[in-house]
Length: 256
Image 1: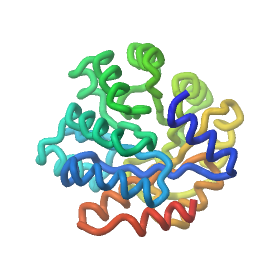
Image 2: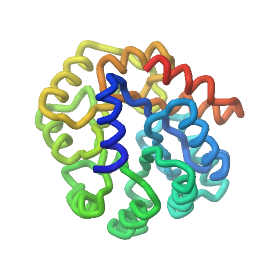
Image 3: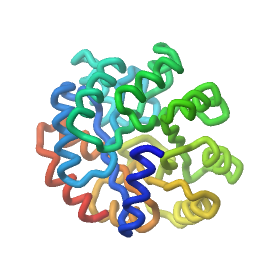
Image 4: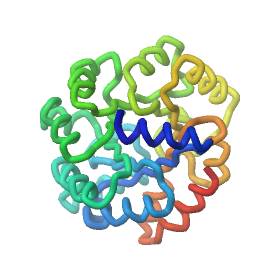
């Protein structure tokens, strides 16, 4: 049992849904990211997803791609992000998730990465280009050290794929609300509702929805369908513009 499990359990008892903002670590700097995390927590976030910059972010749209470029240009690395999380842990217990691609993990080494992540205070990881079918080498040590593995489902996922992802995921399931990249326009269709209903019919693991959610109205609708709502590109865009994110985050929290 870790912070992610405890958070969803506590929210469920209160009849509330989880709000999970995403920001790119190191954009515009690691010091700024630390303050963003604390501001987001103060504004009502339940879990924070931290992106690790990578040169070929296949699942990300232009907004997050540009954030990754700015982060890498400022010298951000996976090791430095883990150092940042150690600093955050001195002042905050909010659940933290790393969203990274497999290459930086593989380069560091699977078990060394997992041990370093858990030691730093990471609660879970999302690796978009690591599919459950090929993830046993990662899942086994992650279970051993207590690191949640969060895999993706989409509107196109078959029943077989849903079962596979459910078995491989801990913490929560990440439902991608669109068949596209982050920051794409959201379209709430009957197929999405049906798929979410099917997923929740076979597992007690919470389901959080992300991709394409940018307004309080969209967040409110998604909160009625899932256990959590993830918002990324819209927040990253405000950061890129040098604008305050506090009021926007508060509006999403209120809607959810």
